Amino acid sequence: MRIWRGPLPADRFTQISNDWLRDRRLGWKARGVLGWLASHGPGFVISQAAIIAASDEDGRDAVRAALRQLEKYGYLVRVQSRDARGRHGEIVYKLMDPWS
Image 1 (tube, one colour):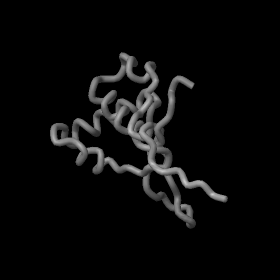
Image 2 (tube, rainbow, N blue to C red):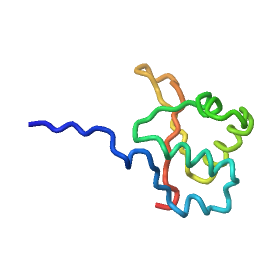
Image 3 (tube, rainbow, N blue to C red):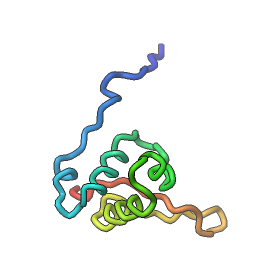
């Protein structure tokens, strides 16, 4: 017998570490982007363009600055993928917990 799990009310909430939200090294924009990224489930693929498109207020430069800040402090780790022939592929960012 299989039981398929449907959407649950808890799926509409995100738990974020207080350490993340209270990290004074991060500006408010970076904290907002961090929270938005954390609100997506494991395996969710997002692009810089999609992050930019998700806000009517902040443009490309603001999003790039926030992403640079998150990378600087270890919340985002850049991974250079390679194709089967060893050539550089797309750059993938992984959301990480710098406190662990």
